[in-house]
Length: 289
Image 1 (cartoon, rainbow, N blue to C red):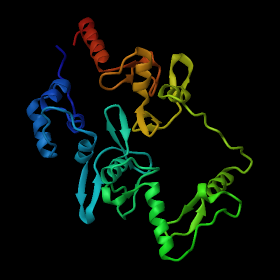
Image 2 (image 1 turned 180 degrees about the horizontal axis):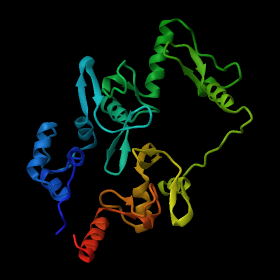
Image 3 (image 1 turned 180 degrees about the vertical axis):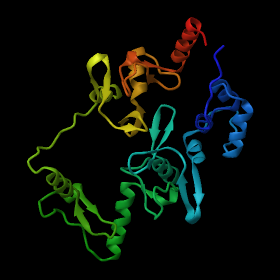
Image 4 (image 1 turned 90 degrees about the vertical axis):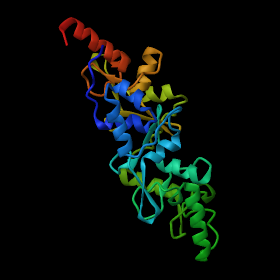
């Protein structure tokens, strides 16, 4: 029988917010069921009797209403700007995008962000996508009497494709802005064309680089120490992809390297929870607990 795991409150809360029952959490983490129930009451997480939480229900457990009708995000954040993110099953989602779809009943077009004064607000009434922002700015432009949008910019770019509007309704060329930023970095540098992946597996291989010793290094973004792959609007754990490609099955629990090289993505160097438990049981059987 495996020794009890000294799970932290954070471990328990993560499973509570994923929609697991008290009994299942107590069994998986080997903790007292009363402790799980106490945390559920403390953080006002609803009981789940039949099905795990839906995407929107999980989103709701990580929001807090504050003055002004804003919603503060209580869950995970990523990057230097502390952008809210949320993991659901095997993918990662933008809480702001969930809020937008909750309000408008359709997926957002382009980047979703709050247009109120509260940083990273995820209130459905306070967020907008690129299409919504441009429509609101066209109304501002009309109210200010700025006239029709130009058909071309001063460099000859088609504004039906590249035309954008500032919050005050003034027009600018999106292509000119891209070219100006590129010139500021290095005027002599040719434009780098990124290869486009046609599958999740191909996108993973484009960012996984074999190194000495049979290890694999991740060249893509990293979120909270986890190699992260964004593909077709969703984030995926690179550990889970590498594990599935090597073993031919989806990992149970977290997949992580056991070779001693931090962040290694070699499939044979990864283990999921059952594999780690078997390793621990064999070690205890040979050397004693």
